[in-house]
Length: 375
Image (cartoon, rainbow, N blue to C red):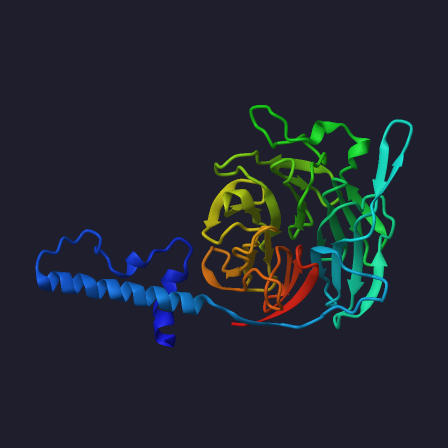
């Protein structure tokens, strides 16, 4: 079987069909019994190779039960964001706690409903960061940059907030809805989803950086664009609108960058990952990996792309996570939707600082899993 898997490497590429192993088979018109036998033989070969490819694509993996040790009175809600720092500490941005609203003279002030926790590499609870912060409302993502600064993306407050490693606020992008007009919304003009230039986010979804420290924000639920900022937070440009064409998005839900500064966008509604250069010019797309919900690119000399075909919260279809080369070659997949250990309940976040040890944040199962791959 190992030899067969090795011979079927091309079938693991995205978009490759089994007919490639039988060139010209579709054009043959065989009238003789010998010809029919030959065609049948080729067909059996195709089926055998397809089965071998399927077997080859399954990655063995383990999951550690109860990886987090929470204090008695603290509980996880939906694990919207997970990220690790250079020390191996884990940050979880979770939808838990009670949202509060205060009516002022002309507007409503809201906060609460999300909390940011830190755990050490053994899973021991370390601290809560940003307790009572004005921008914590509806957790969407957490990421850690090259300097171990912690960034949260909050879909409810329309904000991206940077914390220092010590847990102090360093920078904010965006403003809460009660402090701005609807100017940031997608609109009904000729290019819906483009939003307004700047950090007028409308339910942002993710954040990433290139090696120079430039900031890329996926502004995805209300708008359909990617916004680029300088390291000091100055708006540089944005690209994208709502649609199906190249460079358009139908819910850009997750974002990642590679060592060359290319930007990968999980275009969930269009069931593809779009790849752009650092200035937003379309390069290519990766399809046939389901509807990408969360993506992650590992560091190091050989980078891998991970993409979760997360199940919808009201469905048990799909749920697998793909491991790919950056050119879109599928190396394998693992997992399925479910409630048990090693199953996934709407994965909203992936951390792949170690390419063989992933951290997975789940929405419907209210948990975090540490996954060890055995490729």
